[in-house]
Image (tube, rainbow, N blue to C red; front, side, top):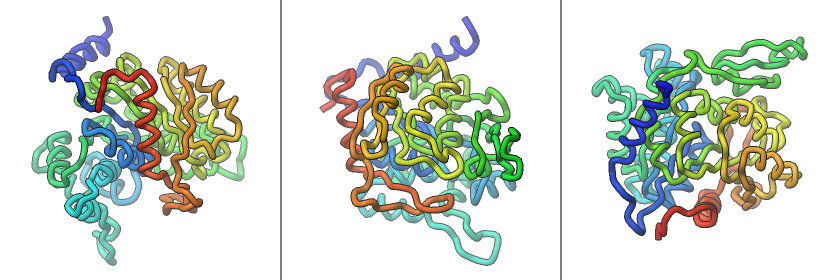
Length: 354
């Protein structure tokens, strides 16, 4: 038995310590990703289950997170903050705290563009010396409808092999370093990897995946938020071995730079190359974003999955401000929640949750 397998068995016992599931209990759902995509998924999932855990990438090196990471040597807090904000309730308390932790300072000094939530999270890390305990404490303060965990307890650097990153050398393949740079590359990303290689997973994140009923991967920046989870060996092993059903939620549109020109099926092919042992159960896509349904069904079938098409975008072509150049389509949390709920009910429901 390998070291990873032995550790997974121990974590499975840890994750299952609550005992047998009671009839009528809500499904245990784990959502993996980062940034705006994970926030969209969490805003939907919190509407249909109270047993929700977010596992968040920690490779961000831009903006406020990058500055705190460089100055203090901490995990980048930004995606963790966004996940916590997405889990805030719709009451006055939840919405007030969501706005507070998302608030950014505007000045001509060192605090410019730092998010309040980033500073709060880092302060608690320094006070408590424990990433998970600090995030749990912030979640209680916010009244978050779920738990937020980092995928690893060490800051990670994302590196990518990119063809044509330098527009003057369109056929040259070189290494691009840093999540912010990878996300905006004008070239074609061939593959990504993490530095340090084979980073340790946060044990609570592994245990949550092993004990879940459903695992949701995506939507989000494909190479910089979704695939990195598959590059943490213990987390990938848990995703492969878990008895949970696995849903892959596709983006509403290709991301400028990172996945420019990608078809929905190409997203699946790229993910499969990075994690060939990972099987899926369901691929969820917006019905208006799939021009070739047969090709998507074929690509999903190669990963063991069925395709579910549903309207999950904001109606009327509304857009949300993008973090990169230009706007991006926005998920409708109610429609996305309805799609997840239907999938959970139709595909291998484990128990009568309601």
